[in-house]
Image (tube, rainbow, N blue to C red; front, side, top):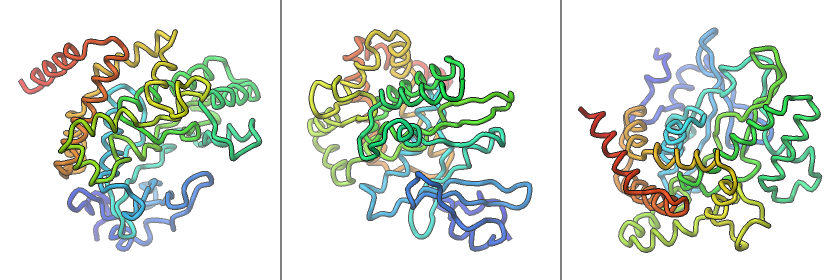
Length: 339
């Protein structure tokens, strides 16, 4: 009987249904975590000392904008690696007849006395109107109060806030549109040094990035009409990073967030420049296909290359960066890697 979950990979997807059917003693019934969508759950796979929890994120087709959503999640992960941001290690799977992404429990490599806190828990502990749409400054205030209450060093608070700002900047490059202030997790508790700690957890809330907020038909239409693509990308919202009073309009355009984050902040500007120089969509595509032993649909690969390049051009204009020099340097690096 097969026991290695990798043996159940077919056409790029791990058939989790078949694995769980053939290894009923190797997993516990899926259970849900407070604060997570009820369709997302942790389950245990493997046997005895080899057991691991995995996080399953099913995507039912009728609830998806397009069939590329799972690929966008993996491409996003690769882009974050390129700029040093931690993301959960996602893989492709099939579960309950639907496509899914799966990952190991992000706490596997942490101390047993550490646990996950969702941003909503921090926000609701400070703000009693839970129906209110929180902004990023609300989250920063909540992190400050949490650190004060637990007597955590100022450096811990500062690092959490800086890491969130970096995610928001990287999101803009990756065309993310669904990040909210609540879409951050933190790892709290006693760390491996025996000290009370708080740090930003690896990302896993990346549902609509790299154009997966558009339908398949919209993406095909945009490939046929480049002007439509440029217009739609420029209108993409990004609501996590900028509070309403800092916006130029009621609609949270990504430019507002970018200016808000880099204004009078040299570190954030330097990180944005690093993203422009180091994020490489072609390398991300190559690594995803190699990792999953599958091929991303050609029309989606074409779209993400064009869309990512379009966004990079726009950001370079905002930051007064030399787009052509950046692209020449990336091309040179690719040539050197091939030699």
